[in-house]
Length: 362
Image 1: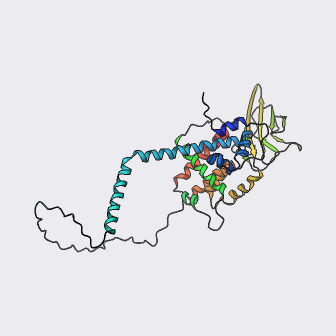
Image 2: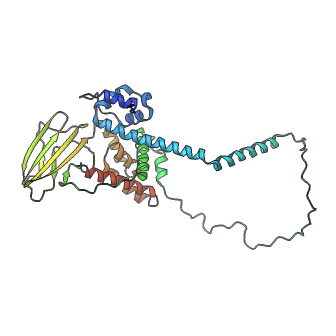
Image 3: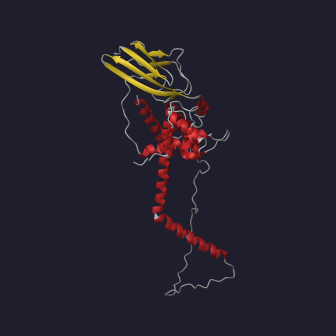
């Protein structure tokens, strides 16, 4: 059977190792790798890292799917233009007429046109001229208060396309998040699928990893709601280089990591919590990560611009930081700023669906 994988995917499969090379790739590096392929800067180093890093590999595959969808859309639009003759025929006629007019205008003034006008079959009957009708109203009606009309409110395109006026230009990571988010929303709108409505048997209170894939800072304490009838809880936390399991009584709904075991910026972890109730075991599993120190300036930018640029900030929260609840808050604020913009509702629905999928993935 013919191998349909791309060259990059073949290298990823061949280059899998136990330890990844260097720190995780930035969003801009992954996006450039998707868009440019071998022409991307640091291509070989990025390939080696993606081959060994599950998180970067998952992000790369998601971005690649978005880019493929965007290319299919572009090809489909181009095909529609080619297949519609009514679009090209009038355009060709207009171009020909334009050439004739230009040629007549550029002809010397003394040149006479030899073509004679066609003779009429019968002489025209003169028509008596009618005096123009006297009008009491002006020809062009005017609005009673043109000067007092309100300018249209700002909308989504204005925020997404404008540059900063008093600050620096839009950072590259912001534009990358905007492009990826808009493409993902367009794809999800066309291929909407029913989401799971199943709720987790145990509800976590902190950290907020039920609705987000990343937390901002390392924590030591995990807390959850008591389960009715639970006899005990078993907590397991897994990291790349360590794992611990602790058994707790039924009245203990908090667990604090020991001093020698701690989370760190950029680390990936899994929490497994089991509630024993008679012969029944209620289990939830949550994978999450702590934002790397490289992401902290991106987080600071989003926090600073939530009020003046809520749409861009929400897209940065979603794609650069995987903070879905923060993105939802920004789009809710944008809905108040742009109440007549239907795209805000699409963005809100998209983020809410992502949060429901996150909650159901236990």
